[in-house]
Length: 88
Image (cartoon, rainbow, N blue to C red; front, side, top):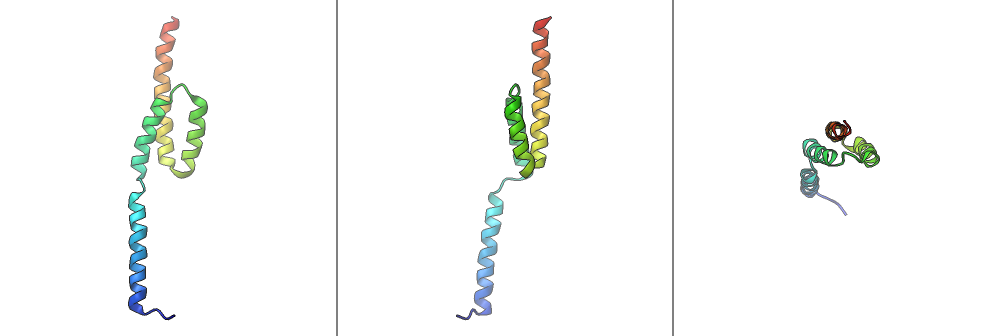
């Protein structure tokens, strides 16, 4: 079966629009970093879970992994200070 130039252009245009639509549904690095930061904050006190999540994020979203880690460590330091004040 032969495909005309017009048909080929239409097929390419359709496929291109599908790919662009799929990409627009994918979150940006900034969006993922914001969510990861919130998650890191909420997981303070759970270092084993944080270690696994950080490893998984680093492979796909390195910027989000860094935001996640920074948020976690900042919150963990806050909690350490709060709990250490109870010991004194």
